[in-house]
Image 1 (tube, rainbow, N blue to C red):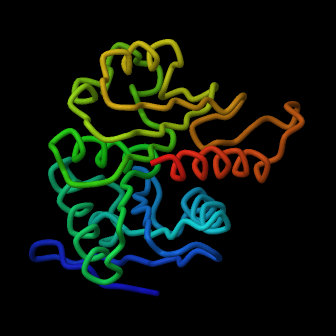
Image 2 (image 1 turned 90 degrees about the horizontal axis):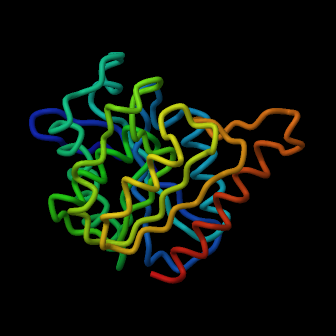
Image 3 (image 1 turned 30 degrees about the horizontal axis):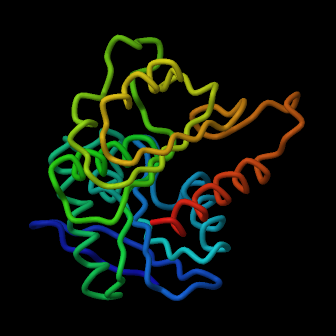
Length: 218
């Protein structure tokens, strides 16, 4: 199902991917990363994998991608867009539970919304960008302790934007339930080396397994 979502004086595209099974009570509003969009392979793979486990997914474009720009919107605009999409989801689908999050920058925007007290059931962060590549001292974690909803954060152990030791240190002060899951050998895009003996489909299966269990326990 394709939607147009009003965001202030602008509008953007969103797509509702109904799950193959499930009762429609829970929707994951999934934002894309800085270099991606709602149709990129990573976002589509997540939507397909989670949909097969009964979780409805709504994908959307941030405004800069809708305008075919490569430069991400400022964080307040990213947050405003996410809020607008969630409001549209609630009006159209009336789900009992809304999980927000997404890949990399999109997940970071959702986490900052949650830290502001935004009404959501939980946060699903995929490849959270804790720091710029090669600059672990520039951590994006100051807001994390303010989060009060359950969090599932999935990162690869080879992610250049999220050093495992630093991430474990960053979430130590968080009092909300935070489940950290590490994909062995995966990079920021959840890709694994051929030498690992694993396929991309197997990695996405792991993501789906962990997410399904987490959602069931919410």
